[in-house]
Structure formats: structure tokens, C-alpha cells
Picture 1 (cartoon, rainbow, N blue to C red):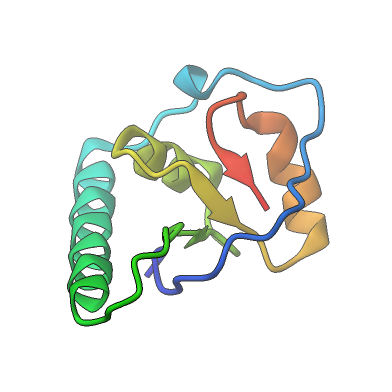
Picture 2 (cartoon, rainbow, N blue to C red):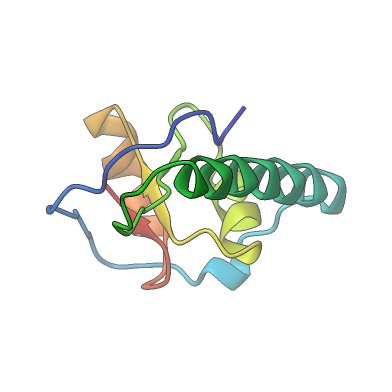
Length: 106
């Protein structure tokens, strides 16, 4: 599952140029619906966990996109996900030029 980890946001974000518009990358409608449903489920779990604690700190949901195609990032971005994490430097370097200024890859 693309949204399988919730991580604390790091302070460094790598952005490379030139960037391609996210609108030029398409996600199949059925896949986009699946990703949106997964994202909604994860957000509900995070909100539930937040209600169960006295801490009121902001939480950043980082969608781990390792080994996933750029079209999955587009599908999640269209569903409101803004921050994505890559575990492998090479994948980050390959994907970052394809991402517009909207999503953040970390």
C-alpha cells in the first residue's frame, strides 16, 4: 500500500529541475479511486490517534512512494496529499524532475 507509513517530516526537501507539470501525468481512474480511499483511511486513523492523546502538535502525513510509479503520486496529489517520501536516493532523483512545484518529495 502506498500510504503505509506515517513519518515525521524532515527539514530537508530535495527539488530538482526542470519539472514537468503534474497535470501531464495521468493516473487511471480506478487506481486514483483506490489511492484516495487508502489515503482517507490513513487520515482517519491519524485523526483518531490524535484524539486519543493530550498532545496537540501538528502532524504531517508523508506518503511513502518508494517503488511506486509517478502516476500513483499524481493520484494521491489529486486526493490532497502534498508530502511524499522516498527511501532510495536514485528513485528520488528519477522522480523529482517529473514533479511540479505542488508535491514535496523528501
